[in-house]
Length: 309
Image 1 (spheres, one colour):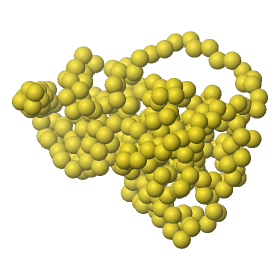
Image 2 (cartoon, helix red, strand yellow):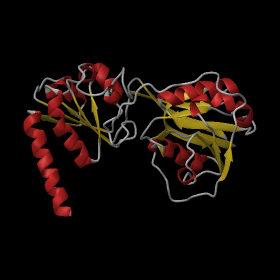
Image 3 (cartoon, helix red, strand yellow):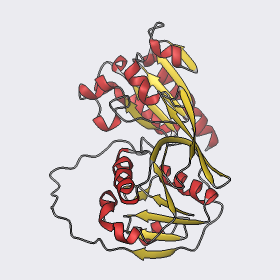
Image 4 (cartoon, one colour):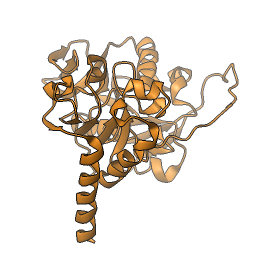
C-alpha cells in the first residue's frame, strides 16, 4: 500500500515534524509519496521518498484531487498541526477515509493498522485497530525518531490544479517571530509567565534559550499583556507542544496552561511560590527567585560552553 505524506514548511525549510512522518512512512510502507508546496529542488530532493508531488498551495490540496486519486490504495500520514487538520478534512472528503489524531505509535500488524493515540492531556493512551483498510493519521510532534540513514532516488512530479483560485490574497503586514527554532518542533522549550514582572526581563529567558538551543514560549496572560507575541503562547487556547524538556519559569501552572504542555517528556519548574500547582506536575522543581536562579544557570552554561571551545 502507498503511504502519502503531507510535508509542511517553515521559511521554506522542512519541519522536523514532517521529517518524523517521512521516517514512519518508510518503516511501514514500501512506496512513499510526498506532497509538498516547497519549490526549491535542492530542499525537496533531500526528502527520502519514492515520489515527490509538488503543488502550489498545500492548504488547497482539494484542487488536486483528480491527480492524487490516481494513487489508489493509499493511506496518509501528516503531523498533527492546525494546518494539517484542515488538509486532513479535505482528504477525508475526497477519499472517504477516517481521521485519527494525536498518534504516538503506528504499526502494521497482519495487514491491519494499529495505532496508539493520546487524549485527555496525555492521561489516556488508546489502542486503535483500523479495520477500514486505509486511514489518515495525524502524528503528534516529537513522538518518533527521525531516520536519515538511507535515501531513495525520487521521481519529481509537478502537479497542476484543476481550477484557478477563485480569490486573491494580499499581504497587509508581516511580523517577525522571535524564535530561531520552530516552537512546535523544538526539543527544548524555555517558557515564562507573569512571574517575570515585565517584558524587559525577558532578556535572560532568551539568553537561556539560546544557550540551550531552545525555543521560547509564554503563558496566555503574558501574551495578552503584550509582553510576548501570541505565536509564543502555549496552552489550551494556544500552541500544544511535546518537547523533550519544558522549562516553566514563573508560571503558576493553571489547568489551561497544562493542557498545552502536559505531554512534555520532562517538566522543570522554577517558581518562588512553593504552593504553585505546577510543582504537582513537574519532574524537577526549584523553589526560588527566578531573577537569582536563571543568571546562575546562564553563568554555568556559559562556563561549560567556554571550556568546550
